[in-house]
Length: 86
Image (tube, rainbow, N blue to C red; front, side, top):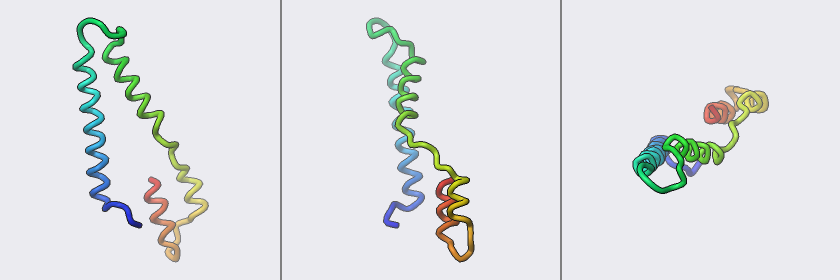
């Protein structure tokens, strides 16, 4: 109810994504040459990607939500809930 406007959320998410990919690109630029632990650029990117994926929450069970909160004209919040879960 008191969250950000949808466009603000989209912009925030896009900015976070851009920062993450910029960080990955910086990591790639710094992995050449000597020293280090011998990891390739792909291995470092895989580690960063897996770290991000490990922190993501589980997907919502949309079918279960649709059963529990069926779309009904009398209950518009059910429609909004299911749409937001998608």
